[in-house]
Length: 124
Image (tube, rainbow, N blue to C red; front, side, top):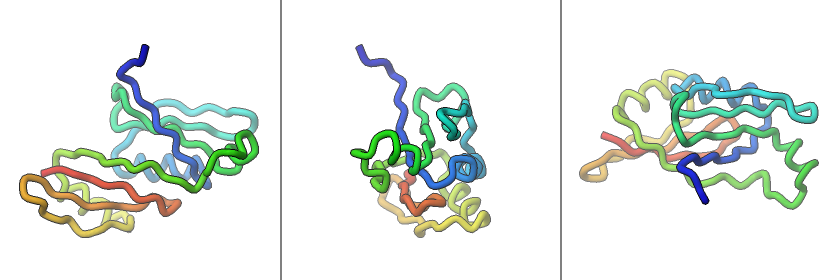
């Protein structure tokens, strides 16, 4: 049976730098461990969140599972409470962001991580 926990694997060039990036926008590092000579880090919006990202180095995944396309990014839409505040914070951190678009009842924008992967944000 499935549980309500969801973990999305993100393949990045530098796990430590990627973890710091996500922490700079409000995520927390839930765990960090070494696995066969490489760091693996789990990050999430909160310590108790049932949804998390696990960061893996691309080179590690290419070595262990060469059939996986490490350059593909899942399409992820985050929901936030204060979208304008988050967009402003990201711009202050020099994170590549799109402009906030008003879509009627909600606003949306996108942003890129350190590896050029784009993610969407929705909120009010």
